[in-house]
Image (cartoon, rainbow, N blue to C red):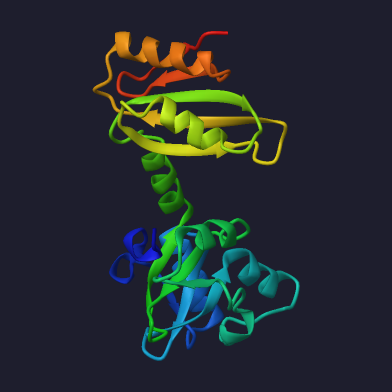
Length: 217
């Protein structure tokens, strides 16, 4: 999955200009309520970095800063950007310490930002929280071909998503997103087939109805 399908477009992004003064930037952050916004230059085409409200306050309180001081010296995280052609995984790993990531196109022009909310939307979609269904958590001893065997066991049912947890551990958990069209009778049959293969269904979440039910022990 590429970044280009999951970010806030430029026209909906609040930002400062690199030519702004410290006072202009501080007033703008107060007005918008954000703790950080991107800073753009070259008429709003190029990403210059991030400006933080806390950085502006430190400039005033600790460095005896003046209202008319240039914003450029206070810009931080100039490398906080990803290309819209990058994979979702790169953004997921890069955004951890940041409030958001700037997104640039192949020509290096600023096109928007990816926020933590965008990341959560993708994860919610992978868990089936938007379309509904059953999230089945399956525990198994780590061994070669475990996922292939699990998928083969439930091959008669539409698998809408798959997520593995505890990778590298002796015991692994696999979360399988099954279609909401699955009947309870069919679900119980799948559980039985999995347990015959030494998989253990530890939990089942009914996302469609907002209910959860413990799986067989």
